[in-house]
Length: 122
Image: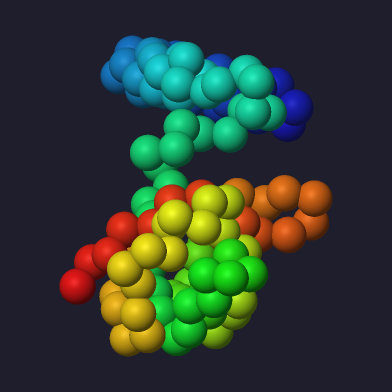
């Protein structure tokens, strides 16, 4: 019984090698590994994570904060919600008014989310 299982497994492996499946899997893994940046703990490149989308609810340039009603942000496992975010640079808030549609990028710093980039998409 054990020999039959081993032979069946060996036949499957040889069939996969014959069709090039293993080579494709190995080649894809190599490409994936090459795209990783070693200094960020193996996270995929930033292009993999699209900008988050939302609508401006309020802008507080004095405190450097913006309230955003945003769609789900899978990168940070965030569901759709309205949230107040600090911004990295207060100049990101210039020209934004409640109701504007925006796309934005976040970083997690010391347990808090900080907006590092905003694009007005009206």
